[in-house]
Structure formats: C-alpha cells, structure tokens
Image (tube, rainbow, N blue to C red; front, side, top):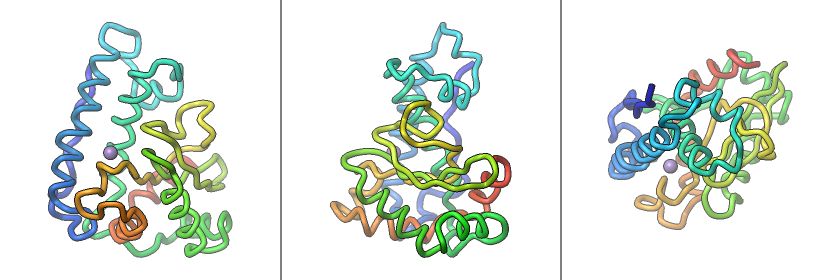
Length: 202
Ligand code: MN
C-alpha cells in the first residue's frame, strides 16, 4: 500500500487573503506531494508499508530520518489542510471551549500561548495544540517535521491543531513577518474540525 496526497477540501484561493493562492499551490502541490512520494520510497519493501501513518509515527525510531522527516511531513500537512477552512475563524464552542478555559484560563490566553509557541520556534517547525486522555490540553512546538505522535520529542498528547511555521508556508505573502501569518491563521481555523478531533481523543 502507498500513501496518496489528500485532495484539498477547498480551492487554493479560498483562504485568501490570510493564506495566498500561490503559497497554497506550491505548499500542497509541491511540498506535501514531495513528502508523500519520499515517504512511499522510504517504506517501500519494509514492514511499515502495511501500517497506518499514525502507527508509523507512534512507533517511529527517531534515527530513521527518512521516515521521520517524510512521514512527519505527510501527516502534518494532511492535518494542516483539514483544520483550516474559508468559513473558519472565531472561537470554538462546546466541550473544546470548556477544555481551553480549564487548561489555559481563557481563549485569549490560549491564543497568546499558541502564538508565542509559533513565533519563538527558531528555524523550521510546527506549533501544536494537543489533547491528553481526560481532556487536558497542551500547547507545544516541534522542530522540522517532527510531531507530538513521535515518542521522546518533548511534546505529548494527540495533535488536534497544528500550524506550519516553515518559511515555505508564509514567505511569499508575509516575508519575514511570521507574527502576521500566525495572526492571519486564526482567521481560517476550522474549529468544527478541531472540536471533532478533540472529541475523538479526549
Ligand atoms: Mn509545510
């Protein structure tokens, strides 16, 4: 079995002006496609060929850099497209909203903490909102294409929201202004999808 690049659920121009069309085209069509192809090449002929991507990442040997980088890249971007929507933004409701309040104090405090995690990740990486069994939430960040499913990465729980802070994710539109990109991202977060992921794993 091989992994396939998932189709976007919206058009490449749908997240304008927060995420520009050209960035979406290159990011999905070139970067994510590249991670997908390289992952398939890395697992070809190995036991990992019959595993789900989540099982591959939770059982990953961190020394296996081809699977670490490309399996991470495949999973992270698949999540990223789904937690954004042209109808996104605003704040979550229901159980996720309550969990954010009990874990961070308020949505505003969560937003500050998440933006700081995204803004202070030096070089390339991701910022995450993760849920632990029982519903406790955690904000963290990882380098490169690592993610919280990988053991020993210093970031735990199940990722329900992720933000790509590699320069390829924002440079065409925002250049060096990563904080503006992070702020724009909050206008396209698909909280219905994040809530769904929360409810599945809490
Ligand atoms: Mn990316």
